[in-house]
Amino acid sequence: MTRDLTPRWYSPTEVAVLLGFGLSKVKMKIATGELRSIKDGKYRRILPEWVDDFIHDQVERQEAA
Image (tube, rainbow, N blue to C red; front, side):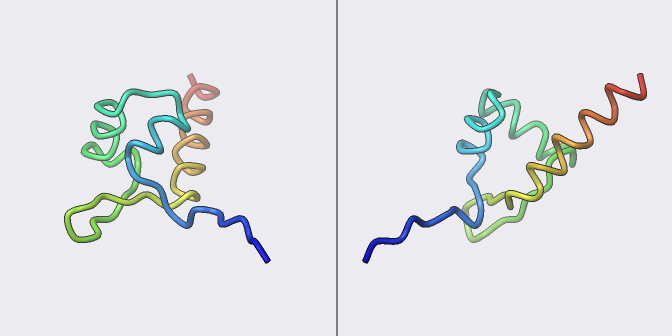
């Protein structure tokens, strides 16, 4: 029996691919607090819902402008 596993969290590199950004842009968004993340040992992790929140915030900003 095989089961497809859905990632429970992403690395900054995976988020960069998901958003079509470069890794440095994702790291900048994390550093400025625009994209939420946690530190797990030496690794930075981002929950899928935090990626969704970031996208939602970006859309709201554009619509308000």
